[in-house]
Length: 233
Image 1 (spheres, rainbow, N blue to C red):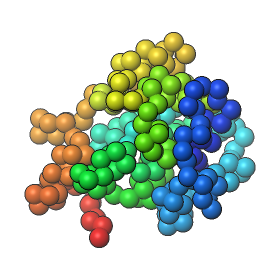
Image 2 (cartoon, rainbow, N blue to C red; image 1 turned 120 degrees about the vertical axis):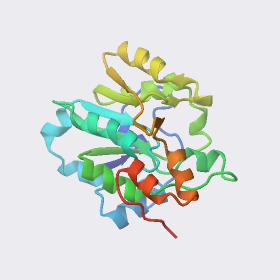
Image 3 (tube, rainbow, N blue to C red; image 1 turned 60 degrees about the vertical axis):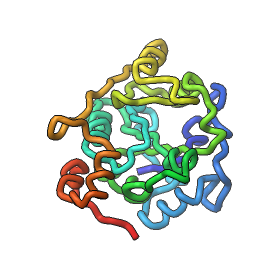
Image 4 (cartoon, helix red, strand yellow; image 1 turned 90 degrees about the vertical axis):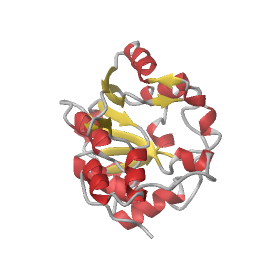
């Protein structure tokens, strides 16, 4: 699995705010320390692996999903599996090197359900072959929703996008899944909006899992995650 930065993902893109959105320079080719740590500890391939990627794979259009994916629970996995099942496309995920809530509201942020390297390892296990990491910042949070979507779709050909029903992007979360589908449709990209995965009559969500863990209901949290939970110190 190749892991690249948002700036690399949008390279050659002429859309406003496509790149240069504040990715911090580091020894890992301009990626943030969060990405560097994930690469070193999870053994994930970095940007340099693109030189060795299959030329045929690079010529395929992308099928992708985008989101924070905190915990990568069963609802998130539904999106990822749909992308991986899209015939004739390379399966890709656009996500964040750090949770946007940790940047925007650090005083109330409860912490991630699992680490970035754990997220990347699970994405690889699910069959994803390309991950683009957004190095989120307050500057990035000011991008308009349409500009973000234009950058997302303005580089390599994107044939298919899977979004959750509660997807939002852009300054003030101004652009929802329906608006994203309309925007992408004008550019020839199919957008599939997934209904939430339900459990016990309620949608599965990261906040629900976090609440179950806080109240000692580990079995419920693991059922919603679809795998065992391992607390980090």
